[in-house]
Image (cartoon, rainbow, N blue to C red):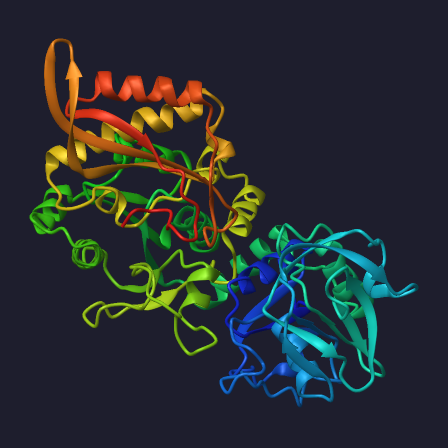
Length: 511
């Protein structure tokens, strides 16, 4: 089935992925491409959205897209930088703003009778995020909306299906952002809403059958949502020809190796569990640099996985649970990630000695879409609702060097924290939670004795995709009970703190 689809041109905005997620929520397929790498088959897209950017259109470094095959030929929505670009280089004027144009604002004027603003009313809240402002509309520009401080908050270009806004419809702070995107994509661009979980499963299973035929496929399971949903899609397509390997790197949560193997057995998957914890922990001994730890874990995992894969005769494919944000982050508007925050070891190809072709059934999906696809295949809600867990596991939650004793301590602390979240019905209200073992000892008193033991930090965040996150305001009573239980039951810990940092500026993990 050929889906209707939307092209999103990325100018480097931190919100570009959010635009794509909002479009997908309308059951419309979309793709993100860098502004300077417009797909050759641009005619196959039904509409185009231009993202925001940290760059000013007035600077020497202004980003110039080639819109010759788009503008006036396809419905186009220009957001923030896109709106200013169309104005500045098409007969209008953009200047530095005299007033603060960041944060919440209210629409003070909306032009009547416009499909673009149907079911959106004056006083609707929008989110601004720019230091420049449009002083004069481009040639044939028609004013559609203003805020109290920003006159040219939205406009269209007469004679084209081209619309432009200086605010961000994709962020939650823009109250009617969903409605605005609905109006543009469905009313103006006439895009069909045909991108659904059931359709994805049906099409993907068919494509996998055609692509893989009777070939054997090996997949490294992690116990997480992505690899599990990828496994079920492949299982539907090729059945017994899927060989799953679940590696215990010694850095999983308490009892997780046994629990996950049991869960996979109930799903009918062909899974082999490999306990390589000693091999990982020996390789990590004395290593404290976070990137070095990640690389060691990635290297040893590939070695262990390769050993096991060679035991299966005639394997031709390696399956990976790569999802769309992993793909996007490898190609940004500037030709690469704007900054290396941390290395991922689930993307980036294979070592030369593992001569397998790669199949990635989830590479078009965001995390929330992966969960919906899993639910449409009747997968266990407990598994689908599982919090994200980093590939390097507890290694990046133990700051500094790793020892077996530190792993034991953190596993015990983590188990108490997560079990309490579940028993207090808080687990599903949190996007990700975990405990960090800090490289400091502090003085405490237990009974009549002074102690000098470890400090742990608890972390719980709310998010939709991990790109941004806010700390969760857990009840004081919960934190009090959890802290007491950790200190009383986990030998080696005498202090518990709670992390109240948001992302940005802090990351979700501590390393």
